[in-house]
Image 1 (tube, rainbow, N blue to C red):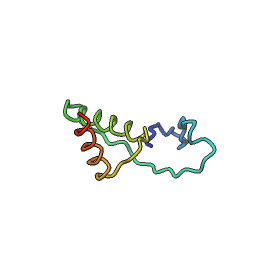
Image 2 (tube, rainbow, N blue to C red):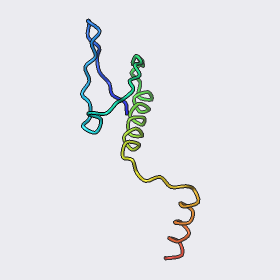
Image 3 (cartoon, rainbow, N blue to C red):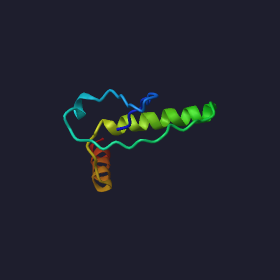
Length: 79
């Protein structure tokens, strides 16, 4: 999960934490936010990255390639 926030002049970090993480031990990695030129290609890529992160956070059940192929074959045969 990626959270973004500002660090104030005194060096204090304040971040709203999702309910699912409250009371749990977490590791925090601090990296500066890169400055990109505001071009449509960069903006589109940033939006794509955001969408991919959100789908990753859904925690959908993972399947192996064998399971996917098996389900595709079963689907084709059912038609």
